[in-house]
Image (cartoon, rainbow, N blue to C red; front, side, top):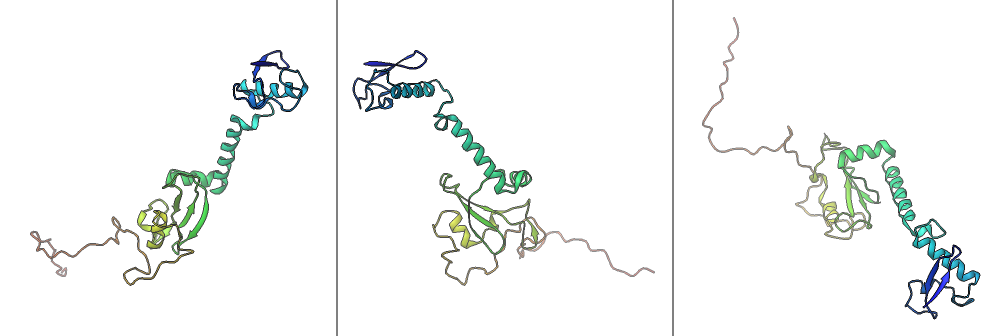
Length: 212
């Protein structure tokens, strides 16, 4: 085991031969060159770089440390803000769906729903939809529902297929509605089934006699 002195006087352990894995700095010494422990300029510069990295200094290797991670986070944050129209749009998006995502626009259905994909997210979260603001004459900006997704996009969104309907349109079927309708439960237009059971209580209807 040899040692190499850095410019600040600190000794760093080195291997005794090129390519030896005995030292953690084996691959950092400059071979071929002046040799290990020779005190050459090339080896001394390599030792200084190793020392800066081991001590967490911001030397020439700063791009491979935590600073690069911070830069990547800031770049991703700016992309999120820009992808949603700035701070105001990002705030509305957070209030609406509780998350911010940017990805490649795969397609838009005839109702205005936009479908995105980003394979950097883990499976099951890499595809999502931004719902339209109005559907079936109903304002859906704050009242979204999963039934707003038509069948042809439902299968792609839930990873039943890798082919979106923009490139592989579905085969038309008689039982599929041409105009998809969202779930209207809880609205004045909800479906109320007809009851065949006789009522036990009849509502009182006031007589409509003309006033004298």
